[in-house]
Length: 269
Image (tube, rainbow, N blue to C red; front, side):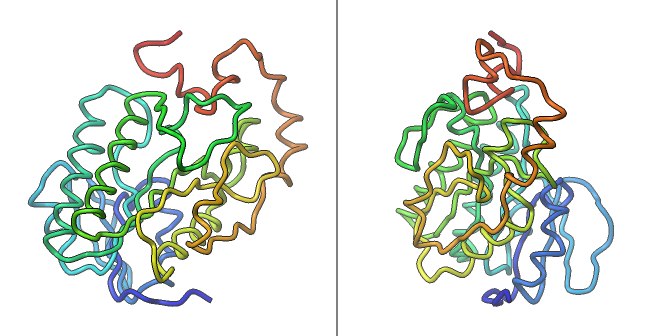
């Protein structure tokens, strides 16, 4: 059973893949779920509100945040690409979000960070939240900025944030890399619920992964959140191996935790 501790919850990026997966699930966490995205994505259902907002537009973000008790921030650019749109949505946008949270006294945020904050660690390494950021592209840099921004707003204004470094959240793992990074939709919801309901969240960095046998990430520093994954990529292992080829260990995609992101964008290897 999910305990409701917030009357009105804001979900940004509601039209995106994870936003759609969370839309019904998060209704169990609140009385009213406010949904937001850049462009129209349909009418509000019972128990919902829809507010359209460009994250780069401070006034629109301010209106989006006003009146909510907590924020689940899934909005922004979610893939590697040119710097300018990433800057607008993920850097300026996260500043606008935290400024609005400060003005409207919102004290808890769940921020969708990414494993690409640490994408240039090798797959042979196990890292924890104390390891320095090693972004694998502009997208990873923007998420590292968001983590730092949220830390500042916690230290200066007391806004608690869980920075969830989401691995690969899909219905099932798509490739061998995802056997280590996979996060089921239900485990994502369990993790968000834990972040919303734990008595003291502080500023926490949490790797978003299910209970996978293969892992590069150590979440021991986030035990105070109380998240226990219940799903695992292991049940998909045979099927993934059957449909994929042996990785080329000379390829950076197979060497680094960021996978294909380390070669994405205009730079290459």
